[in-house]
Image (cartoon, rainbow, N blue to C red):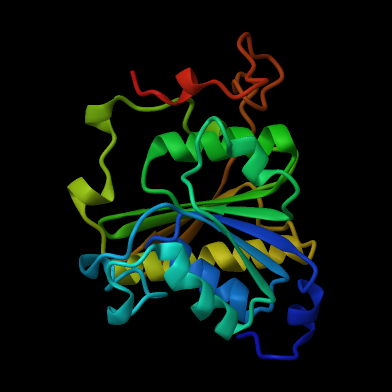
Length: 248
């Protein structure tokens, strides 16, 4: 547990982090980074606080219902210890992704759809920015820290977008609030490691089972044929194109 005035807090007081999506995963991750004393906390979202989501979006309270998430989040995060909170009132889109991630020391992605996850992976790889991916559905959650050189990357694990019918979401399948809380904390833990220069847990998929309460780490190997970071690919991704993020 980090405490005010700790060495860890001082170490990241000049760092810049971007959180993509202030939902069930982004909320606890943002709170942990704020408590750790992050220098600049950039948050990217365009949604409003809904009462039905309060059980898992723990950054907000009843008084925030109906407000823009960014407006509701900023005072909470400043009160928790973030030095500066910068708002980006937009989703991560092909038109703005590289501009948004550029210059950050770490990006945390907690989106609830595969298109945004692939877009974050591609933009961070092209801009040489470290990235922490997070996902949760039903009782299962995952986290993955990727170095700035991007190998192995998200496309080493999932080659491309699944078809619409094969890609369940939280809306269609549901998710347990405590599971996203655990995974969001893990995202922040991995991000703080990276901000302090510790990459020992990068390139591993952390899988949390909310039923058994087990956490497993599985090494991910770079895939030579990966279209993003691979060395033997016939179709390398060298720029962002909207067509890359449309499911077949």
